[in-house]
Image 1 (cartoon, rainbow, N blue to C red):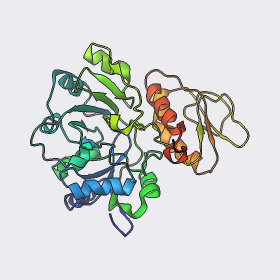
Image 2: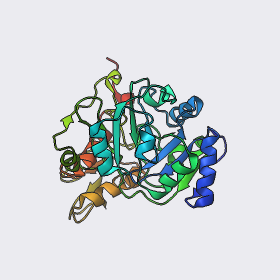
Image 3: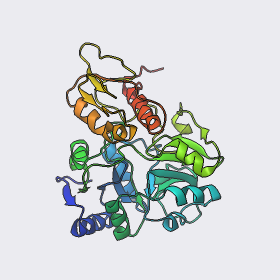
Length: 324
């Protein structure tokens, strides 16, 4: 954690070198991926990883995703499988996270896995993320670079607005192209969808040649097996209402397709555009301080990830629940 304002580094060779040096020194550095901006720390450094949880206010039972530059680097930390190989060959680098059993002697802080015997890991596609991982030369633990439970960041300014002086630097490489977090697949048993995300379910099942098992949102934190499974997550400050045909008095309206609204995910009904714009528009509407109503979004392709994020944003929040 730092008491001064974070550095804003450009995603050029000097900026990437400085970001890598900060990571090596145990500092927190936010960096862009194709999905969202991540809050990175040296995954072997327990104090650095603990600082991620402190900066975000993230529950310690919620594991982190390990970011690596290549399949070969990923295989050092987990027990690799044939299904992992199929998916990695098809979709890495890209918006896919695999959950696999930890390998003995992995050398990672136990905080990365929240004490689980499995590890979530991915190889990001964005050029600047790849360059940072190569320059750092080690595993980087990185959840989304925002206060825990709030709207994920898809620009450097979102990071600065949310985390302020709690981090050392942010590597600015413009907006994220995918705009929702990675799809998470569990491979410590039969292949299972643990979180919908930036890679459509249909493409994954085609690559595997078999349907994926579906998992429900854990009701208890002891049942969490991967990042992004909290019931309340990705939430604006004000309330959010899904599948709204029209706004109620006092609400701002986030549309989809041709319609009258305050902001539109995609006037043409393009799910890729809608996913890329989702968090940015939620940030914009949240700044108005009014409840948000969201028009229906189809539930196929990237619409699954969009509806997953909206459902978690609309869920009852822990601070608002009455004691049982």
